Length: 134
Image (tube, rainbow, N blue to C red; front, side, top):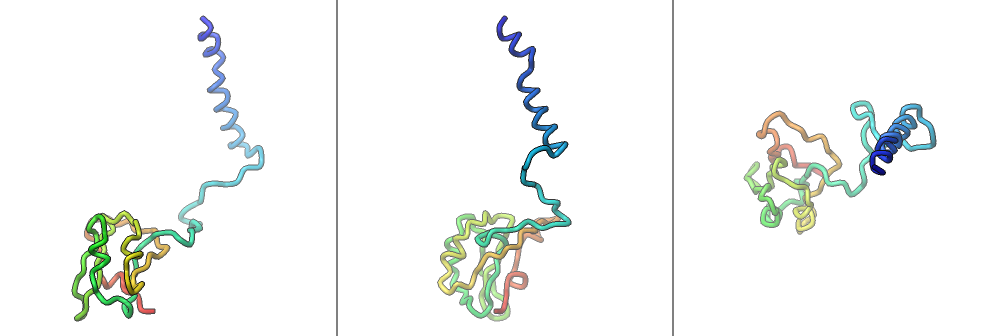
């Protein structure tokens, strides 16, 4: 019978309601956690792993990034008489191994995080989309 008296008072529900009321009426000194996304952008860390970019002048098309990709999401393709990586970000897990193993430091990860597409074909980033001239 002791459990009936303890559950009847509903301490858990009352504690939850107190937290909700504090947030609703903004009682207390609490930092705002959510970001109003379309109007404000998130502040990203300097080491954030976003979309890949390849420096056109540094890349030698060696294929080391393709060999070290654990998911096989990188392929080396021919583009304007040279070889460059093509990344399928639908398979990529953004581990950064391709960036770490690039001997020429040609591949980098940018801070771009809005990568959603309507179809799978748009998730394949060919050299036209990845190449950057620095």
